Image (cartoon, rainbow, N blue to C red):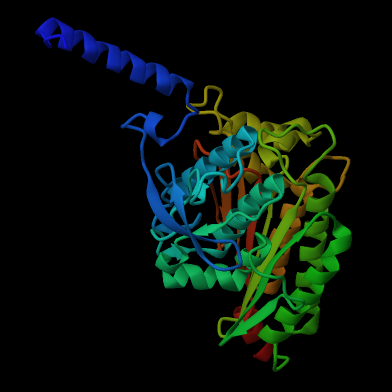
Length: 397
């Protein structure tokens, strides 16, 4: 046996290291080949509607803001929704399974950590459900929830009441979409493709109107006018949100999402309508407009915007103030002034419109405010609140 001199020992060490590298180059990528800086392996509990099960998460989770609300925390909420959309699109393009069950314990690539938010608004819940439904349909597989037992109780309750788990396919859908809790009633999210499916929405909204007005102290004509205006606005969205020549940045599923809440104590009705289609800032510059609208846009549009969506709020504001084209064709630009008119005729109310990166709010006092952020909401969101208490007081006097 040869004596193991230093040079011999060094040669053996180098040969072993080279052999180790060659063996690992031939192996398929696995946890051993993940760079230490990128390695983030977490044991999580996932749920797809059956029994919960344990899985490995291979990436750092996306963390939503503590308050998911467009009215009160616009920038952070819009940023999160865009990050979620980008991550979902990347997952769809990669064609990886939502859950990889090929190697022992199930694995998920990443997830949004909903144990962090302490509040979510109805409007944010609708946009969130739409994104998860798109992801589930793209995969033909239910997107699981992760660590559901750690979610904030108020956030879970809101998502449960609004029908989030039904929309994404985790729990079976109810026949009756109206849920009663104390002095409020909620119409769960209804996901539809065309105006023919809006009968269910119309019936649910009529129930909410009757719930607000149990004593008949609000004229029936006002309730009917309110529901009619809303139905027309939703029909306009279903007819024009997804034109045949529209090429979206992210694949859509041609859906419209609607949810509503009635508050008997405040005698108010709030309706949320969302689509992932062509947006107001994209369509409004293309339509034929009256001269006063052209002049208004010429005065208010920034010729050198600081970011891509900076003028979006101006287009939405013009659509709410002036409507659409001189040819009076039905589209969302015409539907928004109709919604404002209903508010003015029925009492106090608020209309908030978010489209691409822009927003415009019509406050209860009639004042218009608008602006934009450098993140897209991924379509158009309308949040419409009508307060009927003032109307009731006027009628009773």
